[in-house]
Image (cartoon, rainbow, N blue to C red; front, side, top):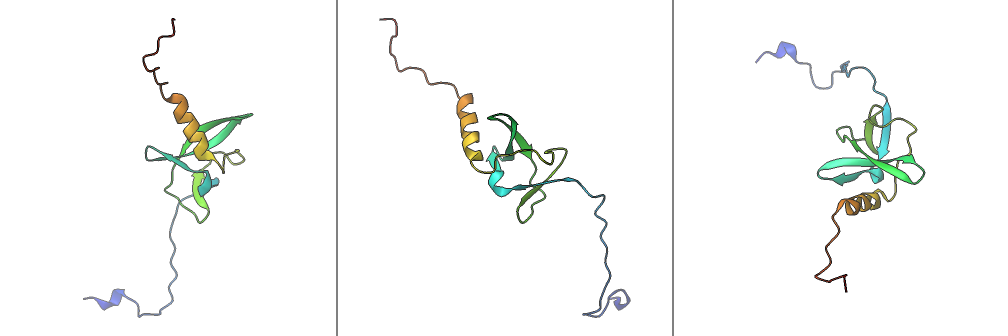
Length: 108
């Protein structure tokens, strides 16, 4: 075992880690994130009373939520932070086919 490449315990070391260029983006609160089909989404306002689901990555968690690059969600975008699950439910029920009437004849 070569001991020339190690330092004694307690030796101060200067270490740097190249993390690449800084990345611009926003932190999305955990309360704004909804999950569907194993993917994370936030709802961004696209008009008065109108929202669109935006898929986000969750590979960069923070203490407050998830870091999302500005290419995905621009700083200043208005997102739903409370009740996003209700929007998901409404969107899913709007896509579901309406149940057929149970054998009733409407042509009396």
